[in-house]
Each structure stands twice: as C-alpha cells, then as structure tokens.
Length: 242
Length: 247
Image 1 (cartoon, rainbow over the protein chains, first blue to last red):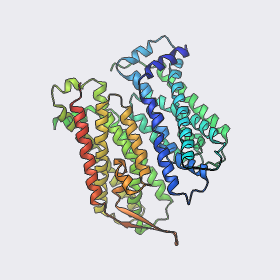
Image 2: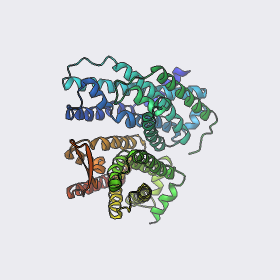
Image 3: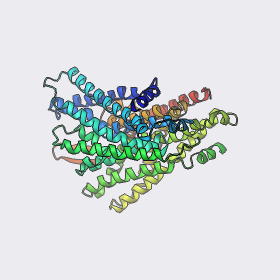
Image 4: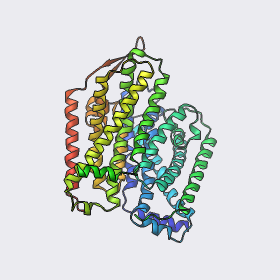
C-alpha cells in the first residue's frame, strides 16, 4: 500500500522543479560562507572546522527549516488545489499511509539538502586548498541535521494540512526558527523541533558536546507526534469545495 | 479606488492580520531580548535600536513581503478568478490595486512597529525619541519592503504555484542578512541588501579600548537612486509579465 502511494507521489513530483531548489539554493550559503571565511582568515584559524561554521552560519538556523517548509507546503498545496482533496480522501488508502506518503518524500528532501550541503562543503574546502584532513565527524553532522530536518518536516506538514495556505506555514517556519535560536541560547534547543536541525549540524560550534541520543529521541518524538496529528486531521477532514 | 477596496475584501480571513501580528511579535521579542541584555546605554539607546532593527528587518521583512504578496496572488489562482476579473478591469488596474493594497498593509505594519519601538525605548529610559529619524527610518524600511513586494507580487501573480515566489522571498531573507557582511558593491547588487544600505546609524569599534560608538549617518544618494531603480524594474517587469499572461 505504502509503496503504491509513494509511487503515486513520485508521479506528482515529476517535472515539478521544487526539489531543484534543494540542489541549487545550498550553493548560496556555500559561496557566501566560503567568501566570508576567506575574508576573515585571521580570526578563523581552524581550517575545515572554521569553514563549517561559515557554511552553516544562519543557513541552518533560518534558511533550511523554512526551505523544508516550502517543500511541505507544496506537497499539501497539490491536494488543496482544485478538487484534488476529494480525490485524495476517496482514494482507497488509510490516512496514515497518505500522511506517510507526504512525510517520506520530505524526509528524502531533508537528506538530499544535507548531502548537497556536505558535498558543497567538501568542494569549497578543496577549491580553497585546505590542507588539514576532512573532519571525520562530517557524516554525523549531516545525518543529525537531516534527522532534525525530519522533525521540522513533520511539524510543517501538519501546519500546511491544517492551514490550507502555502505561504503562512513558511512564515511560521521562520518564526519557529527564530524561537529555536532563542531557546538554543537558553540551552533548551534539544526540546524544540525547529532547533534540532541546527543543533544536529553543530552549526557555528563544531566542537559542541551534544547528547546524540536526546537529539535522535527528540526528533523521533516530534515526528511521531506531529504525524499522528496530521493523521488525525486528515481522518476528520471534509474536503472543502474550492 | 474600487479595485483597491475589493482587494481588502478579498483578503478577509486569509491570515493577513495574523502574519502582520506575527512579524511584529517576532521583532518585539527579538529586540526586547537583545535590549534587555544591554547595559542601558541611555545616550546611545536610540542609535542602538535604529542600528539593530534594520538587521532584524533584513531577515524578517523579505519573507513577510513574500507571504503578503502570495496571499494576495494565490486567492486569484485558487479561485480561477482572473479570467472573470479581467472582463471587468484591465490587468494593469488589477496589478496596481494589488500593489497599493500591499503598500498600505506594509505601511500600517511599519507604522505600528515604529510606534511600538518608540514606546519601548521610552520605557527603557532612552529619553525623548528622535521623531524625525524614526520617520525617516519608517519611510526607508517601507520603501525597501515595497521594492521587494513589487518583485514578490510579480512572481506570485505570474506563477500559480507559489513555491518560486516563496523560495525567492526566503533566499532574499538569507541574502539580505548575509549581504550585511559583504562590501558595499555586493550589497548594492542585491535588492534585499538595502535594509543595510539605508541604515541611519553607523557603528565604530575601537580595537584598543574595545568600546563601541554609534554615530548618525545618512544613506548615500547613489543607494537611494539604485533602490528606486530596482523598484521601477520589478514593477515594470512584474506588470508586463502579468498583463501579457494568458488567463
């Protein structure tokens, strides 16, 4: 069942260029971050580690969570357009499968954005001739970032399903990210979904001691909680006549 | 005028007010937390506020402009209303009505924002607000936001799918913030970087005494001219794309 739904979602994604944003837009923080690193070599002595702080500066706090929000908005926008919600709700599939059909592609996009970020980081470091070995923690940063992104996607999918708007959930993602930044500064970041992505990536602080178990559990709990909320919302939903 | 009034009717219950209140709340909390940490530098308080507020603007206002334009444009796409609308008003008139709607909403939000922050500064003991500077700051933030709104309106009306418009707004928020770290030449090439170029305060940091001082400044005439140029470009291009669009 789930495989058939995922295949159907795949057909909806065909020729839709939204995923391209996740391939192309990480170039911005990479280029600007590398430029900033080269301009401040005097105060950034730790080669790859310093370059990582510049690549993830701001992007993981504000940019990536809201960008994931755009993807989630788009996924539900398809169903909210025209009479597609009627078709979706009359589809012989349980709501949990329909919600997972939205969450799993978003999770894929979260991993894709981290893979691209990692790839661009390695490329930038090689191009500017960093001589130290590549940080062995890089895969961990990226996987933890993607898991944090998964929690953001679950929250955003619930918001987009509930609000039936494209733009408002994206604005909420930005507001959530700002709140996340403040809570991270208070040491509560691991308990707030929008902080998990930046914390997982160790943005701005690659030497941060982080309890990965808490991060993974927190990401999974938020994902589960908000996916259950989406299932609940979809189960009790009447398709609006738009 | 009638078209403009209709735009306000169309946007009832479309979450415009919560978006505006969310922006104000985010700015207020952000700056409130920031100012609460400062050691009440009373003589420089207003300068500190007017130096930091545009930096928060650079993050929040590009996306706010994108969201407002998207809410206004999406309503026509969702209701497939453009074909009927264009039998009653020319596309140019519709485009202008939507632009003026955005201009009024942004003006309202920024006026409330300025009044709230003046009150906050007064409560924090900064003394009498420099009203003229605040008026200039409000006007300049409004003009920069309006230029970005013109870009966003063009995208939101051109594409039924709001993803490109929102991605442009988000990228703008990001570029606007990062452009503040880059040389003037780069900032001038990015319409989102003008919040930084329009700053009314400059900061000087003395590496020996580690003291920070703030001074009033005026935006350069070149930057004001370039900002108008960007606005004109976005308006004309967006209007042309909308007017020629088959509905």
